[in-house]
Length: 233
Image (tube, rainbow, N blue to C red; front, side):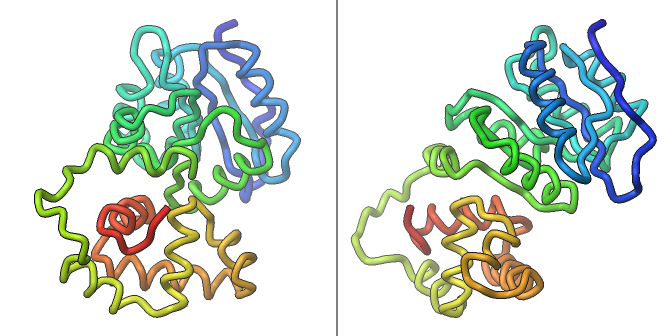
């Protein structure tokens, strides 16, 4: 069988996940590890994008774990198609590829997350749950790579630009702390734990940062923060 359906009598709070990965051992390992974690249920798996898209259209999962190097339709094309056939489904790229162009292309195709395959299953489960709620997440090991695709300013003066200084001024000291953690790919829960505040407070700081930086999501905030020198990595 090129796909395998698993237990579908799910609790309403469970995150329903489909895995699209061509290596069977990886699929089986992911399914087993994730199904051991509370509130996550892998409801289907597929060895290629064509079958994966059929399952996604039928099941309308909360989250899809998508490999990039699929035979036939690749993961980038498949991710773009997911947004058409299942608009509410979030896609997390799970790959061994760490090239900057693929990070940028993945986010451009509509992915809400980018994880490397050496990620710990517990951490991955947290990413899945956060992305299912609407968050964006990018592995801190590759976040800086995306910046290489943004054009460098011709003026290489040492002094920061007025725009950068304005952004730094608008952010409070606490928001700067939150932004640094956000750049590292931390979730609201992890930020709350790091700064010893409530998750609600962490979320409020993130929302304020997005508004002040005039960006739509966490990934854009992280990219802008590093690109404009608001924070450094």
